[in-house]
Amino acid sequence: MTVMELQQQRGDLLTLDVMSTNEILQLLSESEQFASGYEWQVNKPIVAANLFFEPSTRTRYSFEIAEKLLGFHVLSFSEETSSVQKGETLLDTVKTFESIGANLLVVRHPENEYYEQIKDHISIPIINGGDGSGHHPTQSLLDLLTIQQEFQTFKGLNIVIAGDLRHSRVARSNAAALSRLGANVKIAGPHAWMEGYTHLYEHVDLDSFMPDADVVMLLRIQHERHDQTMSFSKEEYHQNYGMTIERVSFLKANAIILHPGPVNRNVELADELVESKHSRIFKQIQNGVAVRKAVLKRAILNETL
Image (cartoon, rainbow, N blue to C red):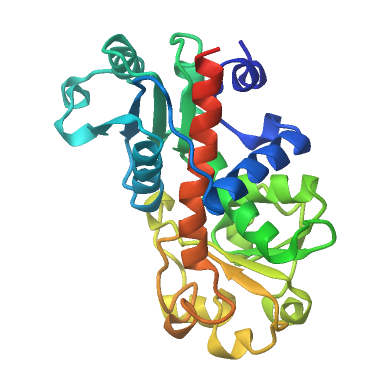
C-alpha cells in the first residue's frame, strides 16, 4: 500500500507531501480547536507506543502529554535499554509493540523514510516523529498553525527559511507545504548547506530580505549530521547567517521569528531575542501539543473504523 493510501485509510501521518492542501487545512482547523480549549477523550482503552531512536525533548514529550490528555495509555521506548542493543531490527521492534497491544506507534528514527521498512508489515497507524533529514510532519503542522494564528492566511506571505537546510527535515516539510499553501518561500544560509533547494527556491541575503519578511524561520545547525567540522566559527555564523540584534531591527512590526528548537543561543539567534516581541518559539512548543492531539485523534478514529 502506498504512503498516500495508508494516510487516508489507516490514519498514518508519514509526510505532508502526499496530503492535499484541504487535508492540511483540516488538520490545522482541528489543531486550532484543541489550542482553543476543545476537549476530547477516547471512550475505550488505547495504547500509544512512542519509539524514539534519536534524542528528543519537544516532540517526544508533547506527544506524551497529548496522549495522556486524550486518555491514552503510553509506552515510552528507550533504545538504550531495549533489545535493539542485542541486534533486534526495527521491524521486529514495531511488530513486538503491535503484538503486545499497542494501537498506534509514534516513531522517530535516524534513517530517511524508515517507515518504508515497516508500513506494509503492521496493521496499526504510524505517526512519523521525524525521519533522518527527510520529513517531520507534526513539526511542520505546528509551525503552520503558529503562522496561521498570526496572519490568518498563508497566501502572499514572505517567508525565509535560514540555516542548515541540507540536513533539516523541518525545512523540507515546511518549504513544500508553505509553497503549496501560497506563501513566497525563500532560503538563506551557507551555499554549501543549500543542496537540494537552490533549484526550487530563491536564495536571498538575510540583510536585504529582512524588511520584506513576514516570517523568519531559523534552523538549528545539525552538527550530528555533518561529516566534517564547520569551516567557520559559531561567532562567524551568527554574524553572517543568524538573527542578530542589529538584523532584527529591520523587521516589520508584525513579523515573527520561528525556530524548531533546540536553539543554539547566540548562534542561530541572539540570546536576547529568544523571548523577544517577534519570537514565537515558545508558542510553537505550546501549539505542538494541540497539533499532536489532532493527529492522534485522526489516527485513532481511522484505526477504530
